[in-house]
Amino acid sequence: MDPEQLLRTAADRLDALAARTTPGDWRTGGLLATRPEVVAHSPGGSTEHVAEARAGTGAWIATLSPALAAPLAGWLRAAATHEPIDPAAEAFARALLARLPPPGGSSPRSRHRWSPGVTG
Image (cartoon, rainbow, N blue to C red):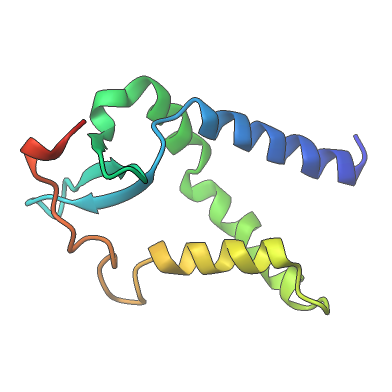
């Protein structure tokens, strides 16, 4: 498979996985730091605990495991060396930085607490 087709195929499969997964902006919270709650927040304001949608979220979590950190970081570093910067790489980096914890700190989203009465 040529490199261009490889990139397109990976992007298509990632889109397909996202389409069958609990949608929304996933945020961590909860009372136990060792077992954070993960809640999907939809644009309409509803929420769903991802454990309630385990069938779809399991594949998503496994797909975006820590094993992808090195290739994604490599892609971002490579994209940073090309002018002009690829807008998709910039958008990805901005979204990633909004969700990554600061060095030595906790997740910026972890301060949002899930409440059992707020699902659905």
